[in-house]
Structures are given as C-alpha cells and as structure tokens.
Length: 221
Ligand code: PGA
Image 1 (cartoon, rainbow, N blue to C red):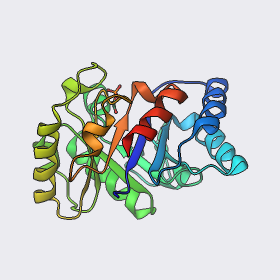
Image 2: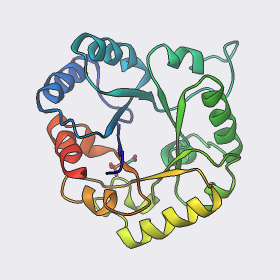
Image 3: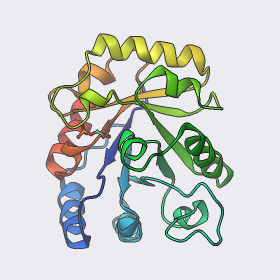
C-alpha cells in the first residue's frame, strides 16, 4: 500500500471559531488509514491548530501556505521558517494563486524552497506545467501538480494526463513524489490516488468542510 499524502489547503478562509468547529467535527470522524494528513492553514490559525492537535493527540500534521524567502529580520509582513517551525512541519510553496495574484516568480519559489529545507521543514511545491518543474533547483521534493483550469472549477484533470505528467516530473526529478490537486472530492479522489506514480492529493474547497475532507481521506485508499 502507498503512503499517501492527503493535504488540505484552506487558502484565506476561516477564523478561530470556525476552525474550532472544523477540528471538533473532524476529530469525531477522522479516518486512520495510514495516510499522512496535512492541514495547510492560514498563519493566524497555526498556533490554535497545533495546540488542538497536541491536546487531543490527533494524527494530523500542519503546514503553512507560504514562507518568507528570507531569514528572520527586517522584512515587514513576512513570516519566516523559524516562526513557522514553532507550529508546523510543512510549507506550501508556489501555489498558482500566489504566482498569479502576488507575482511570485520561479526564482522566489526556489529561494522559499531553500529556506524551508534549511529549517528542516518539508516543502510541497505547486506547479501547473513542466516549465515550472524545470525551473526548480532540486530533485527530491513533493510536487503538487495542479493544472490551472482544474482549480476551483469542479472540472478535474483527466487522470491519464495526471499520470503522464507525474511520469514526466519523475524523469526530471529523480526523487520526487507527485500529488495531484484541482477539484478533488470524495467521488473522484481514488481516480488519482490509484495511479501508479501519484502519491496523494491537495484539496482546496472540499477541505473546508470537515465531513467532506474526512470522506476524501476514507475514499483515497
Ligand atoms: P480546489 O483547490 O480543490 O478548490 O480545486 C485546489 C488548490 O488550489 O490547491
């Protein structure tokens, strides 16, 4: 059996009370099936999430959705690796929404990957095409393949295409893991996790509901 990564990207959603309701509900239905469950929370919720997980002894990992390309210092508004590390193990880097809305470049993505690894955090690097894969300076990362037209549209990628992209990524990056993201839901998750060479999924909208996300984890295996 593959050790899947099932990651939830909450994007810029939820305040603390909503997060508490989500965690209360999720911890009631949580499915333990060997998958690594990673919640990519807004910075403001990482401390809450980490205390909740410790208190209830839940088998969930946390991640941030972005990271400063710099170390600690005079970089107003940025959150650096050491600050993230107090609460989380993973960092999402280069999501297409950051590339598009915040002009994030391939160069910034590489800097963020280096900062993440230097602090012993695990990057999950989002790409939507092979050009972005080719610009990455390492070959040992978790790559989230997210075609732009599949994100938030209800129109997920053709699994055969996902499979061929996953193979191409692994030809270029010998030690990569590939996960798929874009309109993943409980009904289609297995189309991706069953593919040889796809090691998990990155879930946006359907992760905002604890019950939908639990169903995805359940159906992924
Ligand atoms: P979606 O988002 O599941 O809502 O399509 C995925 C993502 O952007 O990571």
